[in-house]
Structure formats: structure tokens, C-alpha cells
Length: 229
Ligand SMILES: CC(C)(COP(=O)(O)OP(=O)(O)OC[C@H]1O[C@@H](n2cnc3c(N)ncnc32)[C@H](O)[C@@H]1O)[C@@H](O)C(=O)NCCC(=O)NCCS
Ligand SMILES: Nc1ncnc2c1ncn2[C@@H]1O[C@H](COP(=O)(O)OP(=O)(O)OP(=O)(O)O)[C@@H](O)[C@H]1O
Image 1 (cartoon, rainbow, N blue to C red):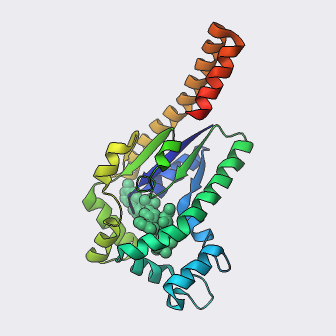
Image 2 (tube, helix red, strand yellow):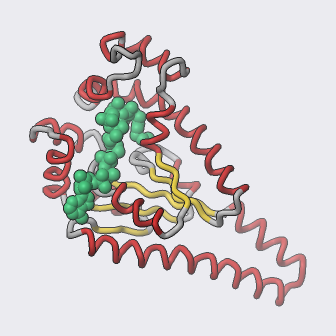
Image 3 (cartoon, rainbow, N blue to C red):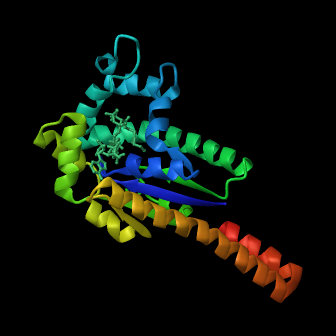
């Protein structure tokens, strides 16, 4: 089994790409969804957030007021680092559990949708491929303002809380450019999907050739090499 890290910037189109991949039957784990689950009332992260940010970031029903917390962390880098240090270990733990679930279910690869993949040190080393959902800066800002009802300055604060997409582009093994229309993006996702599926064929072909050439010892060697690479 191998892992594919999918990332992008805020409102660059990750969910749009993931929707197509899910339609094609891929297993996808969404870090934003998990980030919501791990801060539910009575969780460890909820208690720590309350302790550091105070009751003013709570709604009447005890849940986190995401808008209020967002306003704080997107304008104050040190508060953002604090929130990340509380939530990220919990998010990673839950992601690992879900990866194991898909492994047991027999999926041959799992896509991890992680907005801060390239910002989180060391995480890309576990991914066989990294996919960046790119979008040109002006379109990204416009889509973000429209989707979240933000003013220019607020949208820019959110965008600049992440590494620029042009920087992330250099690190990704695959790029999907979502600056155009949805149809153009869909075509690129179909090509990516075909490559991911081919990548499996390549593995099995390598194993078959390896076994034929070197016998059982060679097969064991190739399997070990694959799972630790
Ligand atoms: C700040 C919070 C409360 C805002 O909630 P809200 O519902 O408005 O936004 P949502 O969670 O849907 O996130 C939207 C996007 O914001 C960006 N974003 C979220 N958290 C961060 C962060 N800490 N740093 C930079 N960008 C972030 C991502 O691109 C994400 O896709 C929430 O995002 C949060 O708890 N963030 C901390 C956890 C985290 O790092 N999540 C990102 C996944 S690892
Ligand atoms: N190709 C496109 N053409 C027009 N609008 C688009 C396109 N792709 C995405 N959008 C719109 O842009 C907004 C952001 O897209 P999406 O939710 O897929 O991004 P995201 O990266 O998952 O966002 P976030 O990280 O902030 O949750 C949405 O309102 C979506 O409908």
C-alpha cells in the first residue's frame, strides 16, 4: 500500500479535486474533517483550546466558535502555532487510524488531503506521490472571498498564513492547475487517477519480473524494499 499526499492552498480547489477522486472510487482521508472531529466538546484538544484561548471562543452549546477562532489565528502567527501544536498531533493520530482501516480493507493506495502538508516538516517523506492543487493567486483570492464572504485584507491574511502556492509547486510530484474551469480540472484528475492506477501495475510488474529473475529470495527483497521506501 502507498500514500498519496494531496494539498493546495486555502480555496485552491482541494475539495473539488477530491470529489472527483471519490467518484472514481478512491479512498480519501480529509484532514479538515478530522480537524473538526478532534475538537468536539470533552476531547483533549477542546480542553486545551479552552485553557489557552478562553471561553470567548465557545458557542453557547459548548462547541468551538470556528469563526472567532479563525479570526484570532489567521491574524496572529504565534496563536496559530499554539493551535497547531494542540490540534496537529490529534489529527495525525486519527489519520493514521484511518490509513490502517483502509489497509485492512485492502485498498492499494490512500489519498491524504492535508492542507498543511508542505508546511508540516517531515510529513511528505511518508508519501509516494504529492499532488498540489494549484490556482493562480488572483483567482484563489477571488474564490476565497466569494466562498467565505471575506474582505480583501481578511482573505490575504488567510492566504499568507500558508506557504505560497508557487513555492509548494516546486515540491510536488504532480500538479493539478485549477485556475480554469471545472471541466479542465476534471480532465487533469482523470489523468492523475490513471497514473496512480498504472503505478500499481508497475509495482506488480516489477514483482513478477523480480520473482522470475531471482526466485523467491528476490521477491522477498523487492517486497521489503517497496514497503520501506
Ligand atoms: C481555524 C479554524 C477554527 C477555522 O475553521 P473554519 O471552519 O473557518 O475553516 P476550515 O477548518 O474549513 O479550514 C479551511 C482552510 O483554512 C486553512 N487552515 C486551517 N487551519 C489552518 C492553519 N492552522 N494554518 C494555515 N491555514 C489553515 C486550510 O487551507 C483549510 O483547508 C480551523 O481551520 C482549525 O481548527 N484549524 C487548526 C487545525 C488545522 O491546522 N487544520 C488544517 C488541517 S491540518
Ligand atoms: N474550477 C473552478 N471554477 C470555479 N469555481 C471553483 C473551481 N474550483 C473550485 N471552485 C470554487 O472555489 C471555492 C474553493 O474550492 P474548494 O472548496 O474546492 O477549495 P479547497 O481548497 O478545498 O478550500 P479550503 O481549503 O479553503 O477548504 C469553492 O467555492 C468552489 O466551489
